[in-house]
Length: 156
Image 1 (tube, helix red, strand yellow):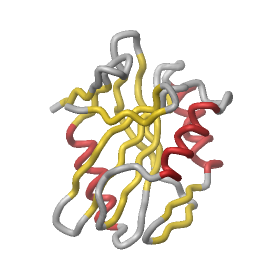
Image 2: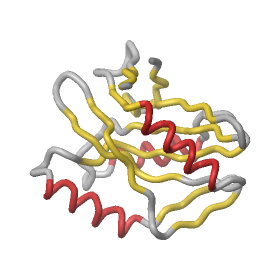
Image 3: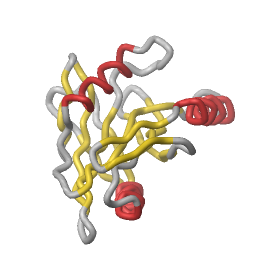
């Protein structure tokens, strides 16, 4: 099933397969009690964005309250999928977990997304952020889009 997320502030909706969210949750549960995350890839067109996949870093630092990924291998991955898809698949944002917590963004999350949106090397100034609140038995998520210097929560 494809889930459509939008907001009256966000310029267009984003579509995400439900199995992708479930899979991100299962990865997050395996990493408990630490945070974990990666990048989101997909397609963009004039009517919507479509998140179709994700990638996790091969090198990272993680703790109960933090996650920092090494970008080098992820940048190579992004370049590879962009070239193989003839420019159709590209970076759309970030995802990470908040163990034993709510799926709400923190100030460091906001600052990271702002930095990404302003980075001229990234050809996408409205990145998405999926945060998964992970517990052993349950997983809740929120999806945000960086727009007008704000992280806007999207609803399904």
